[in-house]
Amino acid sequence: MNEIFVKKAERYYSIADWEKSNNMLVVGFTTKNGGCSEAPFHSLNMGYHVGDDEKCVTKNRQLLAQDIGMPLTEWVGAEQTHRSNIMKITAADKGRGAADYVSAFRDTDGFYTNEPGILLTLCYADCVPIYFYAPSAGYIGMVHAGWKGTVAKIAAEMIEKWQAEGISPKDIKAVIGPSICGGCYIVDDRIIDQVKLVCGESQPYHEVSEGQYELDLKQLNQSILQGAGVTDIAVTNFCTSCVDKDFFSHRRDKGKTGRLMSFIGWKEAFTQSES
Image: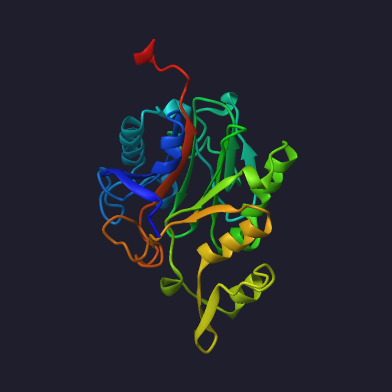
């Protein structure tokens, strides 16, 4: 399978196929490289909530903003709580959570919009980023799905919200992004008992020792999306724990590490350089 994420610069990968389909779309996932943060957040830490110097985090975000051509004034960010709350974003929300944590959307693990000049952002260090795109309707979105958000079916929640706005699941493209693979993600019966409630006929886990299981959250989220009626689903090969050179990993780095960022946004119809 061809890798859906293509490295565009030191600081980020893009979903190149989506960007090629519409040159106003910006969509990708950051690396841990090319920033100013010091260990254990070296170097492109995008998270304000992990104990890093906030000035460094802001600088790192500014560097990405320059790379992708969308200033921080157009970004939105969230206080992520591993639940299934999703917010629809409008122009009035621009800037919230972009250059500080205080103004971020509270208790939010997903965003979507159909308005230009907005960049949706969420942070990760092994959890699953899921991107959504409905080309005919102009809707874009994404969710942060750790094991709790996954079993709460946050991916299906996004589909339900879009259906309520008249978008068929058959018209929605989804991409499951860089996150921890099953081989690196060992969990216990407590989590698997929750997974069994939502996995249907798929079995995205297997026992490796008594009471210990490898859990493939990408596979589980793919199954949930399929159950919600989505057929156009691409899944990355990248594991955040395996690929040490490019990604932070909460599991690999023993909990003290930086945060990666997923982003998706519509550029304004006319930039200053075009006017």
